[in-house]
Every structure is written in structure tokens, then in C-alpha cells.
Amino acid sequence: MVKVEVVYLGGLRTEAVHGPSRSTIQTDAPLDNCGKGELFSPTDLVGTALGTCVLTILGIYAQKHGLDVSGATASVQKEMTAVPVRRISTLSTEVTIPLPAQTPHREAIERALLSCPVHASLHPDINKPIQFIWKA
Image (cartoon, rainbow, N blue to C red; front, side):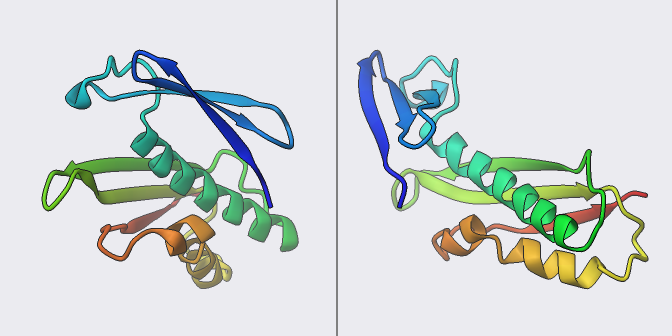
């Protein structure tokens, strides 16, 4: 179990403190929802969690199989909707993997990334496609 403490700083900003490490993150409301948009918004952090989770799972797989995936990237595009309530509608993720498309690990890697805990935890109404780009 991990505890995160969050305090409201005023001006639509918060600061979260990660219990075990004491590292911090601040958020700001987005421009389209009364904020300044100067920091990650809470919903931006959901997209960030998805991208970092996918790359972490890739790293774990690579470590277990003696592969070097240094330089792999994930790009997550978040789209919001107001219907029926304001929420994330889509998190489109593009993962660039620095391995040849013909790698014998391709199917297992793609399956592992699609089962990352954040992807699996997102509400089923959120469209969450992942596109894989293989570059040796």
C-alpha cells in the first residue's frame, strides 16, 4: 500500500506528496476549466500514468529477457468530453520501441503492454488504443 497526501494550495492548485519517497508533484486546473494551465492537470496525470506504466512494463519485460529498450518513448494524447459529465473520453497512446519489428518478442511485448495496470484500471467507457511503432 502506498499513501499519497494532497493539499489544496489555493488558486486551483494542489500539491501531492508521495509517502515512501516524499517526492512531490503540483497540479493546476486546465485553461478550459478555470485554471492557468501552467502545470499538469489532474486528468493530465491519468494520461501520464498510462504512458509511464506502459514504459515501465516494457522495461520489466526487457530486463527479464536481456533486451535493451533504452530510448523507448510513449506519447499519450488525452481528449475530454462534457457528455454526460466532464471526463476523459480518449487516451490514445503511441509507443515507440527500439527493437526490430521482426523480434521474436513482439507478440509478448505487445500483450504485456496492453495489460499494464493503469490500462487495465481505466473505466471501460474510456477509449484507450495503443499503437506500437517498432524501430531498430
